Amino acid sequence: MPIDLEMLYEDAMDAIVEDDFDEATELLEQMRNAAALDPRTLEVQGDLARAREEIDEAEGHYQLLLENAPDDPWRGVAHFSLGSLYGMAEKTDLSRHHLSQAIGYYSAPEFALKQAETLTALAILEQRAGNFLAAVNSLEQAHQLIEQEDDDDGLDETLATTTQLLGAAYRMAGKLDLARETLSQAMNYFEALEDEVECADTLDELGVVEQIQGDYAAAEELHMKALSINESIGFDSGLSVNYGNLTMLNLHRKNYDRAAHWAYQAHEVDKNLKNENGIAYFHLLMGEIECHRGQFDQAHEHLSTCEKLYQSCGDAEDRVAVKGKLAFYYRLRGELEKASELNEEVLSAAEEMGFADGVAATLDELAHVRLSQGRHDEAKTTWSRSLEIYKELGSTKMIAEVSEQLSKL
Image (cartoon, rainbow, N blue to C red; front, top):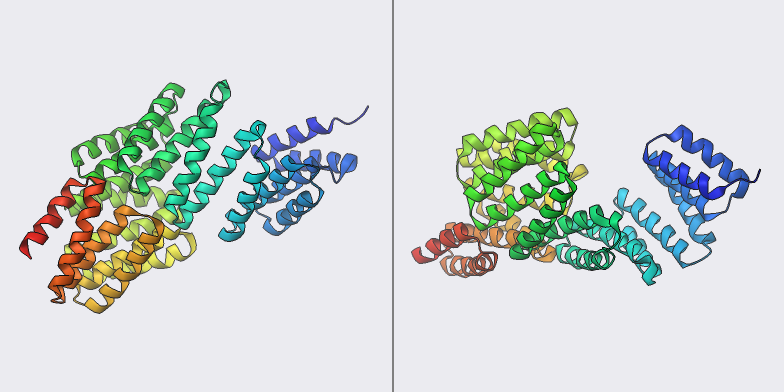
């Protein structure tokens, strides 16, 4: 009886998704015996090695797939696989190169969804690298491609997820009205899908938008709704995000004891999950809280721990964030040259990222440094720049605070 290679391929891919590596290995062996250089065999070999985190072996199989790809769609598969693998290995430039190549090979209309999937992967890569405007651009393209295919009943979840990602990207790029509109649309999709996990995640994202714009009552309502959902379904990863956002909300409100309460709630969850990034974020938050409390030794210990952890688990935004909190610490300690130097570095990075809220916040902090240095004209200029960005963001609280500082000058 002839071997059905396509059936073996589909079964092997399913086994990999289900982490049944023994079954996948048995199916792969049959595929290799039948057609060792068939692109399906090579893809399964690469995917199995990647699932086992055998990066070098997976790379070799994907390179062989690229060399033996019979047509453009398979070249697209090879480049996408290499791009995804290099993304896992944090080789950003190589990942970007291969994902971009894949997009080109998926240019035919019948591969629109493959192109959208690759654009989404590229956007996530750009977000992690801190290139927020590039991420927005890729996600807008992906979203448009998926909407054009929306007559396919199986695309509801894909459209919902891409819409949510686009809304979050708009938020990070400072396009807050678009973020709110897009996230609300994603919320409608997820409610229709009865996807409670993603409903909670989207509510949290909407809460962050309200925090940035200074509507803390609306933000709290959204975060508490998200918290209620995650508590009811026992989703610990979601609870960690909820607690972190409630910490930030109370920091904005200058309620530092309440902020610490939520930070420790998140910390307990993240320790149980062995979530290194979440643990680092706890130290970032507590560093800021202790600065406000005047507990500078504890603040410096938290921020130093955070900085070390982010070297291995953080993305570009994380590393910029801890540098900004260290600048705040040094200003409060009166070490103004250190504070100035770090703020200049953070400002440059935030501007390069297209991180509007980060630029405005750093300008505000830098203006405080300039004021403490007695450089009043520079403080006025810097606060004026910050105010313009906060006006674009619609951040009512910060508009009022920065305007008050300017009035004093």
